Structure formats: C-alpha cells, structure tokens
Image (cartoon, protein in one colour):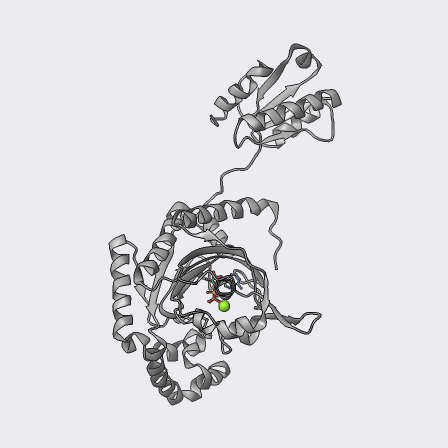
Length: 415
Ligand code: ATP
Ligand code: MG
C-alpha cells in the first residue's frame, strides 16, 4: 500500500481529471460507494473459483460477527447500489466511480495491495453499440493523454448456455493433458475450467494456447453481437486484435470482453479491462438487466504516462507575495484575496514565517512563481505594488493597487 506523495500527486490529479472529464462528456454520472461490503456480495458476483475470492480478499468480522470485505473491485458494489437504491427499475444508468481497491496480492511493480481504479458502468444497455462506445471513449483518453504503446484485445464469451457447451469441450481437453497441469489448474478443472485459460503460470502457456477457443462455440446472437462490435470499432478507426484466450479474471462476464494492454510496463501490462455482464444484476437479486463496463488501474496509467514522456501541467504558484512585517502582510493577505476573487485559477503564495526582504525574495525564486509581488512601507504609502519578473531579466515595475488585477490577468493570460 503506497503513500501518494506531493511530487507525484499532481500527475495523479491531472490524469484523473482528464479521464473524469472525458467520461462525463459521454453522459456518465458519478456514484460514490462504500469501501466495505458484505463478503457475500463478492463471493456471489466475482465467483468462488477466482484468484480474487480464493486468495486476494481482505475479509474480517465486524463487532457484530458479520463478515465484511474491503472491496477488491467496484462493479459488484455498483450493481448492489443500483439494486438497493432502485436505480434499475425501468431505467438505464451510465455511471462512473473511482477510488481505492484492495487485494492481497504479491506486491511488485504495477501490482499493489491498495490500488486505485477508475470505473465506468452502463446498466440497462444490451447492444454492441454501448460496448463500442465504451472502447471508443478509452481511445479518446489515450489520445488526450498522448499515450502510445497501447493495444486493444477483444473477445466474446457468449452466453452462459453457449459457454456451458464450450466448458464441456474444454474440460475434455484439459483432462486429456491433466499430467501437465499445475495445482491451481487441476483444482479449477473440476469447478471452472475457463479459469485455467487465465493462468499466469508460464509453464501452462503452451497448453493454454492449444486449447479449443470460445469463439468456435458462440451462439448466433452472440456471434452477431461480436461482429457488430467489430464493425463499430472499424468504422471508428479503433484497431484491435481478437484474442480468443482472453477470459478475464472474474466469473460474471458474458459476450464482450476486452483489455487495453501495453508492452511498456513489463509483465503488469493490463491498463484497462472490461466487459459485458448481462447476468450479474439478476444474480444479485435485481431484475434481469444487461450491463457492461470497464476498470482502469490508475497506478499503471501513471506509469504509462511517464513511460510515454508525459508531463502534467505545472502547478507552481503564479505569484509570490513578498511582504516584510505584519502590517505589510495584512495588506498582502487582503490583496491576495482580491486577486483570487478577480482572476480565476490564479495561484498566489503569500510569504509565511517572516524573514528579511532578501530571504523572502530567495523563497519567491525557489517557489518557481512567475512574479514576485513586493509590498514594503514605501509601496503601502504610495498605494502601489512592486512587480518583479522572476523568470526573465525584465526590470521590476510599480503598479497602482487598483490596476494590479487587470495587469496580472493580462500577464498571466488568465483573462
Ligand atoms: P491482472 O491480470 O493484472 O491481475 P486483473 O484482471 O486482476 O489484472 P481487473 O480485476 O480487471 O484486473 O482490474 C482492472 C484493472 O485494475 C487492471 O487492468 C489493472 O490496470 C488494475 N489492477 C488490477 N489489480 C491491480 C493491482 N493489484 N495493483 C494495481 N493495479 C491493478
Ligand atoms: Mg489480478
């Protein structure tokens, strides 16, 4: 679990704000959810035979003996909230949420025990159009952030009926090579052979690659759905590869699944993953409601942004107020408030903790501010203020109090 320190938090805020603004621009609204849910919710939604439920959940009993779990992902909570708040009665919902998720994983680069996700869910939409738009939205984010080295993989898992047929064939296949399966896979063979395809064990890759693929078992409707998705993506100019082995680590998916992966971050290459989960709402006690969504790992987004040479806009102060003595500082505070009122977005840092004129100017320089505002006895008497450019050799000038805001707004191009 990491502390996100001030030297990187600016980049986090920037990335989160770009992602949020884009998602909002597609008509999605924020939903804020608790970090804790009843353990049962995740068991039922994510599935018993998954990495998360088998070994990654932070689960504990509360004082009342009730089993609670720190959320390992957001989709289950979004669906739970949709049901308990009646958001899904003859309504569609386009929602986003973000925040920390918790998984007891083996910590390594790009894999943490508390990590952050940005999560988008469309509930009540059954068609391939929304699947496509959710992916097109991601492509827009990558462009806006200047991210390259991301490729899109898509697959279809069909319906639960077509998957049942596939499952039989898969069980047969894996039973035939049982001697070569690892321990996890042998256990999963009985309970959930599709999970074997999600194995991260390199020794298993050859067997997994040679396995029969779901795409050959799709029912007609799922096949058409997948074809339509591909056509929407083609028309939008979003390129992709069909990866028939993409199954995703959760049980609740159906039809479309996708993953944006990068080769820039070593083995933790999944940046944004999603898919359709048409059966989940009903499974959790709501009325049958098709749904689709994706989740993006913020740590991996931050890392990829850096790997692509991205830099968040600087958040340094615009002006640094130099004021010697408490009388001058009182005036400086008042003028600074006035500037904040009049110039939207201006960043004014007032000198705190006293100090001589010279030491204050030094701090002004270190603050990276564009200008120092200087208020001494003479300036107060004249009702003027000294304006000293800190990043150029231009001379200091003197500006009447009442003209300061207009002058600064022009200089800082904030008007
Ligand atoms: P992986 O295959 O890397 O374990 P996953 O399939 O478990 O990923 P999801 O449950 O789909 O991941 O979560 C969505 C996204 O959240 C991932 O694509 C990834 O960017 C991020 N993510 C998942 N687990 C972690 C983690 N432990 N630390 C950091 N980011 C994570
Ligand atoms: Mg995982």
